[in-house]
Image 1: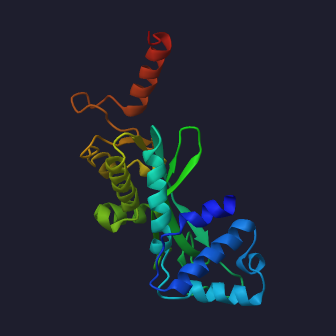
Image 2 (image 1 turned 90 degrees about the horizontal axis):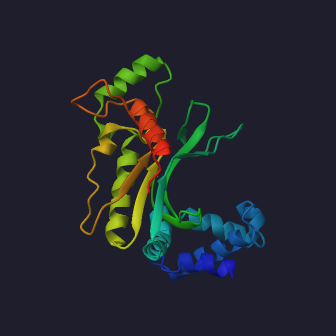
Image 3 (image 1 turned 180 degrees about the vertical axis):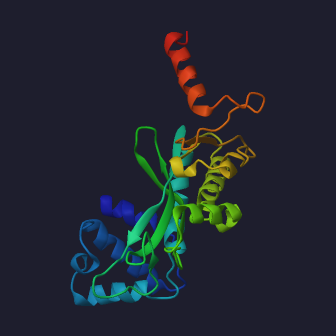
Amino acid sequence: MFVGAITDEIRNCDFGDARLNRRLQLITQRLSEKPNMSIPSACHGRAEMEAAYRFFDNDKVTPDEILASHATSSVERVRQTKVALLVQDTTEVDVTRPDSIVIGAGPLNSEKQLGALYHPLIAYEPSGIPLGTVWHKRWIRESIHKESTPDEKHKARKKLPIEAKESIRWIEGFRAARGIADACPDTLCVCIGDSEADIYELFAEPRSTQHGQVHLIVRSCYDRVVNCVEPCKKLMETVRLDGEYHSCHPPT
């Protein structure tokens, strides 16, 4: 039952070659049966393993095409729920090897740590049940400013437009969430990010859609001014006072 559900997620993938479509179904089945195993261990024999690696090395096979079918199914599940939490975050895909370098890998936190970065937008029910990945972004750093001090790095980032920063991923993820909310008008969609998402450009993004709006929750990182008329009024104090008020005056 579980394997069938997994393979159904990618049933609409089309690489323009029926053999590649069938190979993806088989690879997905094998990895679903042994999710804790590597590709060689999950495959049934050397022939399957070599076919799997040829599949991943094929120019017609792209992560976007593999995800597209799953994302469509995920949005349909969002449409069927009353509230959907659209959570975005970034993870490192570390492929550092002691004796060799993986072709195409870029630096992560240092020149010695190599890999890629992956930023998905995953939908959940409020109970925590995952509904699936609805959008993603991936990228590889070409270099890092290892010789610069933290202060120099901060000043350099300040000069860059948001479109040239890695932080743009939060805005792109929110825009994707807005699109999901527009496609699911009967679902209350809430986009959630951690403290890295506490950037002005994200809060400046429009939240209205053609059929409603997408809500936004961000873990605070900066103690921002919350009222231009009262510039001394800061975010942290306001939230604490508001929380104390509601704890003393519960809603009736």
